[in-house]
Amino acid sequence: DMKVTQMPRYLIKRMGENVLLECGQDMSHETMYWYRQDPGLGLQLIYISYDVDSNSEGDIPKGYRVSRKKREHFSLILDSAKTNQTSVYFCASSLLQNQDTQYFGPGTRLLVL
Amino acid sequence: GDSVTQKEGLVTLTEGLPVMLNCTYQTIYSNAFLFWYVHYLNESPRLLLKSSTDNKRTEHQGFHATLHKSSSSFHLQKSSAQLSDSALYYCALRNSAGNKLTFGIGTRVLVRP
Image (cartoon, rainbow over all chains, first blue to last red; front, side, top):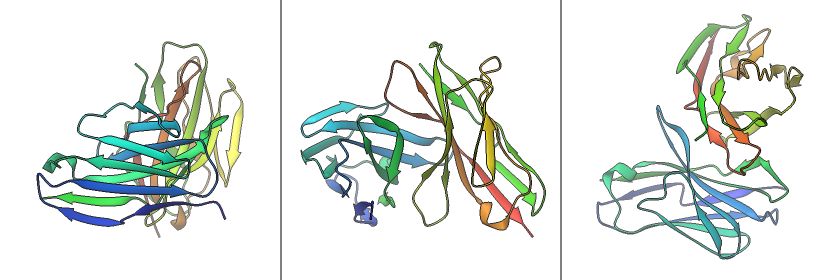
């Protein structure tokens, strides 16, 4: 069963705290993505990873970093979270040869107080 | 850079009536790949349909869209809306030189009985 999972699903943090969002996929997809979804802004790409330790900035990487040590896992890290990072974060994955079809996870709703 | 415009933020319509969601795009590249992703409440966003062929209608799950490069448009249509079509619809673009999707801000569709 092809699946992208995200943990946690809901998270409340205080400003200045560190945040770790985790994503996993069981499809052996090479490419993985982190997006954030905000009303009026749509889905914005934060980072893209082409495989283990092969990561590139997306359109809004400031304030975020990522880690990919295994093909099936892709982490998003917020060092010292800010209130404007309150959002819904989606992870996605795709085959390197078919990056047009992205499989999304269920999302993580993050509230930074 | 690339951009995707979805002018309608919210579309409210009555069940059984036709649906048309507008999508226009801008890219400097001659080849463009256009997509519609759908995000149902409490589910993950998923690919609805895609096209890169000019003036060719593509269909899936009762929806259809035709890429018109002359007008840089890829409008999504359905002849008869169902209650279950209520969702957030994203238009997205990939140019021939890149591997990232650029999403529009999304159009929320609410179908009423």
